Image (tube, rainbow, N blue to C red; front, side):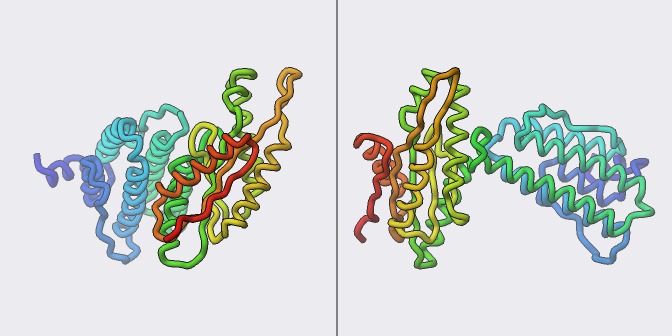
Length: 317
């Protein structure tokens, strides 16, 4: 049976326009770039096309953003495809199975389920469809997209940017340096003796220390500065439009604020400190090269007694 025959077969009795059935089948086949043609006439067919295109656009974007989780996303896409086939047959009771982990894949499943519910309402109320209905669904899709963007950018434990997003921010600033003359600096810091905290008090206290350090460090930064968890107990700060002296001054403020922290667990108290490296980015320097320099500066701070910062000038041209 060809796709046209299949579209007619599925569309019979479903209450869906044939063009929407055809579009849903293309989505089932993985063609998330497909869009229904718009007439911009404001009639029911154009409204259906607008809804479909908005949904397809958001699905395509989220599928792309979730490529790092290919195995789970592959399973999810299979479930979504089966659900869309059921919808094309007129069954709006179908729902995509969720695992309630709260990650990108789970939020996508939630979005698809909510979208199916909205489509059911659209078909039921097609004769009363108005501009407000379209706007409500578009706002729903936009809200889910924003939630996905947050999930994809934030480190779950500390609440600051995750490794992928802070490195992306640093890369964006390095690229911007090629077009504009402003200075750029990067700082990397590590919690001193973090393993001893875990060994002495347990990993739950270690996690609390990570959260406390992240919140304290962020509170000392300026609006334009970006901070993220680089890995384990290491953190990365990006200082746009900032000289080495200015970046070192802010990093020292972060160090002093963290030094004043105190962990209290079962009557035992422990202080927290960090060792940091600060480097100015040279024009045309790659992010990998900058990270190697700032990492070396951080380890120099640790080998020199810890609880201090070491700054390194940009390399000569």
